[in-house]
Image (tube, rainbow, N blue to C red; front, side, top):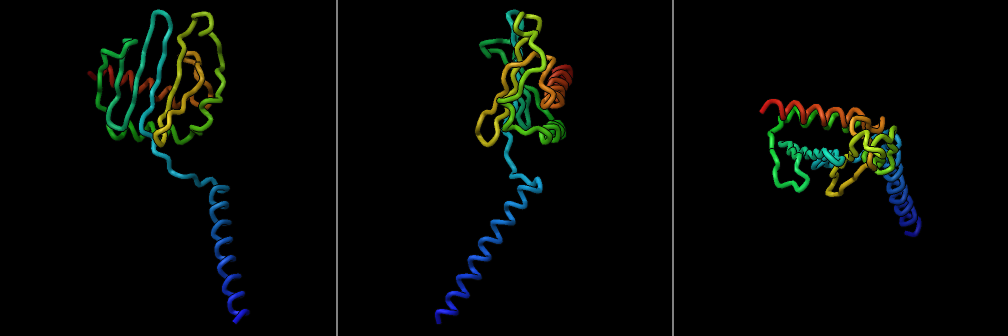
Length: 157
């Protein structure tokens, strides 16, 4: 009887450890959990300039008003959102707060201060300030896509 119990316990422990090893292997092979992106926002500001935009899965909201009283909401297509998510896949969102700006023209008013914020799983993850038009390399494609989408959507209307 003791032998059977020991054998069963050994088998159960072996299966439990084996499944934990599989999870570790999956994360080592680059398989990541799926995180929900609810919104992406981009802000650029200096003394005489202000631009804030928020992009959700169906709308792009744009304002040049610092108090956010005057906002314009534009519809975006599912394809636009999917393209943005494709570019965002190449960005490790958890590293955004630690990214360093490649230039510092904003420190002497030669460029607007810019920040990028991603709302993922209900949590805001924000970059440090960088020069508008000169984002860190890690997010350069994403910022370019955001600004292109905003410009293209604004011009359609």
